[in-house]
Length: 123
Image (cartoon, rainbow, N blue to C red; front, side):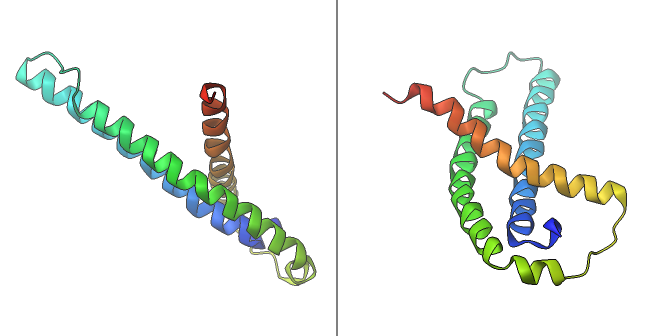
């Protein structure tokens, strides 16, 4: 039943976006390290790593705003609960179900962790 809600479907999309951001940043950092290793030079202090960190911060701030949309969708789902209960459950493999729940959890944890990290710095 929960997998038929708008909140879950939207959360999976945001979670997939976070997964892409994380994997792209890791691959970019690895590519920069390999580049400097091939050229036998020391890594610069303001290299590509700095740009990736800035882009990740921007994407986290951007998607943290969608955290509010998840709450709005949750309220809409509460009003639609009777309709949601009547929808048939779609049978999927166990691995796909686990992956969907991991994406949804990721979409909730990243904005919460970001908020927890910046709150102590706000004076």
